[in-house]
Length: 264
DNA sequence: GCTAAATGTTGAT
DNA sequence: TCAACCTTTAGCT
Image 1: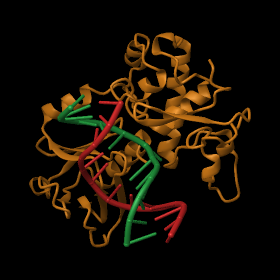
Image 2: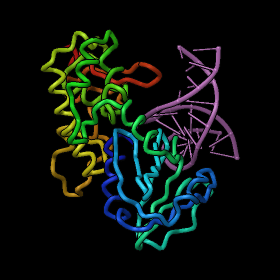
Image 3: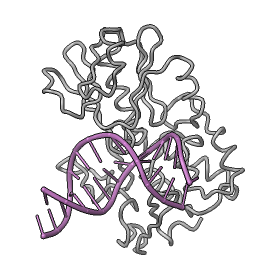
């Protein structure tokens, strides 16, 4: 679930439900003890930077949430069910509540800490203030494989294992090509494509990247089978050319690609 | 009931 | 490069 599109989706929803109101903040699990210091304060803003969520409360206190691999945010109208033993944080205001479970991070930051956090992130394709040139400067000078660079949050913020695999497939780019050998036009294409795909991910809540996913259907629901070109399709026929999709470990994560379609 | 895997990051070696 | 951490779920038995 959680690549940048998930985080931005949460930010949009929480902006609408909670910003501009005093918010009840608690930590049923007890591991976010600072919840007590925020409880009842007005929430001023919610922002997403890459995979990071930042809630700004009155008094310039920020809650920094990172879902990591397993984290989940559930937002729904009240009444809220009893919190689970693992509910790290619960927000509620005005008839809505949100439960955070299993995050890698849920911590209180001051303004300086928030600034430092944002400063270390590369441009986020989902943000209008993003400057893709900043990413290009790093990519075009790096000997690292482009597939590793796309996953580096200091280079580009918000892309995860699914978007990286799918964007490289759609660009026809060999994932092992060193950043220095990527053409500027290729990077422009990847950036534009990532923006498009991720925006549609914010809308749908899913990562859908194939032509098959675009096809209108009676059910309105795209089956998981049709969602991706290569992600988690090891050994199955490439949708474009039939070559078996390959996979390999790269920097601790599984990379998926089509060796025929991705030679560019 | 158990195990492995998962769209992620950090800190130690 | 590797292990640790956060939690749920799918696929076994």
